[in-house]
Length: 360
Ligand SMILES: Nc1ncnc2c1ncn2[C@@H]1O[C@H](COP(=O)(O)OP(=O)(O)O)[C@@H](O)[C@H]1O
Ligand SMILES: [Mg+2]
Image (tube, rainbow, N blue to C red):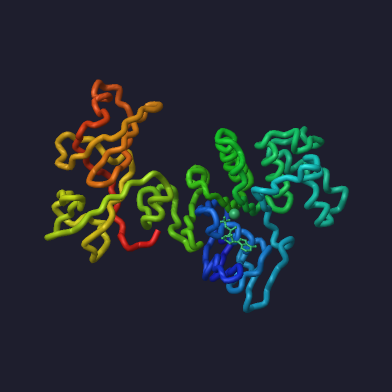
C-alpha cells in the first residue's frame, strides 16, 4: 500500500521555484530517506505533506485518500492528516517537562483528560523514557530530548512519522545511537517513516530506500543504498555520496583514452556505460579504486602521503590535476614504499563514465 503520494506538486516562494511538478510515492511500513543539499526543498516537501503550506499545483494523497488538491479544492487541515512530525529546530519546548511536552498535542486535540496519562506513558515506554516525566529538557541529554520529541510525535501517529533532520545537532556517537533506536522503533511499531536529511551516510545506514534530490529539488535518483552506490544515476549522485575523482577521457577509433597532456590508452573498446553517442566523458573513480600498479603505463607522481588509522591517503598528480587515492595498510613490507615524490603506475577500477555536459 502507498502511504503517501505526491502528484505534480509545485511551490514557489516569490519568484523562486522550490518544487516544480514534484511527484513521489512512499510505500507503507518502511523508512524512506529524502536526501539533498541544504536549501534544495526538503522541508518544503514536509510542509506540503503535512498541510502547513498549500502548493500552487498538485495533489497529496495519504493512505490512498486525497488530502490536498488544488484543482479539486480539497485541503484537509494538518491536525486531521494524522502525521507525527519531528523537527530539527524546535524539537522540544524548553520550559515544559517531559510529561507536558508529550501531552501537549493530546490536550490541543482535546483528548479526554482521563485518557491522557495512559497515552503519555504508552509513548514514553516506546522510546524508553519512563521515569523522566518530571524532567525539564535542560536536565536531559541531547539524545533523550530527541526521544521526547519522537514520543510527542507518536501521540499524533504511531503509523506515520516524518523526521526533518531530527538529529543533525547531536554529536556523531549519539547520532549513531539514535539511528539504531529509530530503526528499532520502526521495526517494533511498523511505522512508515520519512527521514529527511542532508547527511547521505545517515540515510544509507537507516533507510530501506533513498530519494536523492538535486539542488533544484528535482529527483536525481531513487534506490536502495546498494543501487545508489553501485549504479549512481549521474555525476551529481556520484559526487554527493562520497569522495570522488574525475578524469577526462575520449573515444578515438573505437578505443577509450585518458585525455591528459598526452592521450593514454585505457580500454581497447568503448566502455559499456560510456555516454551513448559521445566522444568525450568524465571518468569517475573513488579514492580506494585508484590502485598502484608498477606495470601500468599510466604514471603519476605522489605529491602527498599521510597515514591515519590503517588507511593511507595520497594525493597524486597526473597531467595538470591532483587526485585523491586511498589504500588500506596491508601490514606487508611494501606499505611504506609509496612515498612523496615517487612516480608510480596507477590503474583505475570500478570506474563510471559521466556525460561532461550534464550540469551538477
Ligand atoms: N517561507 C519562505 N519564504 C521564502 N523562501 C523560503 C521560505 N522557506 C524556504 N524558502 C527557500 O526555499 C528553498 C528551499 O527551502 P527548504 O525547503 O527549507 O530547503 P531544505 O529543507 O532542503 O534545506 C530555500 O532556498 C529557502 O531559502
Ligand atoms: Mg530543511
